[in-house]
Length: 153
Image 1 (cartoon, rainbow, N blue to C red):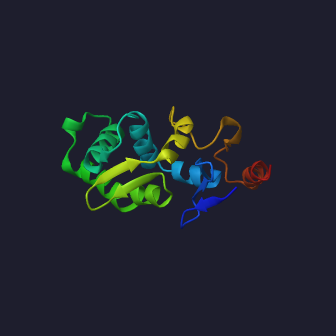
Image 2 (image 1 turned 30 degrees about the vertical axis):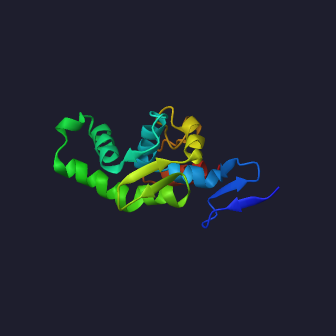
Image 3 (image 1 turned 90 degrees about the vertical axis):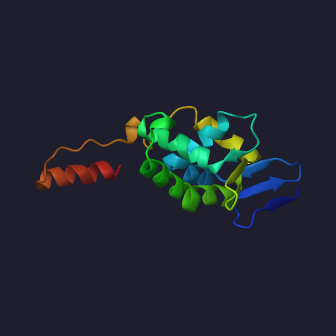
């Protein structure tokens, strides 16, 4: 079976046409809330083949601020727009998850976008309950020893 790997080795296409992405890369991309929001936005509209970057930025800004798009001010729009434009959309494009025409502001999800959907059903915490550590507000030697013992598990 032959495989074709993208330039940055992020995604792989096998001879049968299926696509895959390394789990570490998938979770790296899901690490940021704005990238998750963009992927959710695409997943919510599977019939669309193309998205406008400005509209995406406005929707994400509205979600982040808990207000309708019509109530956004220019600073709220601009903060999200710049982050998407300079960082998040190019990163998703580098990994082959989207095709991003930065100069035209056009985004096209790829087949890899669907691989993220199971992780986007609900907002998730980065840690599970059994990974959370509650530490007493105690700076004594006992408190520090307790923290170290918890981290060494």
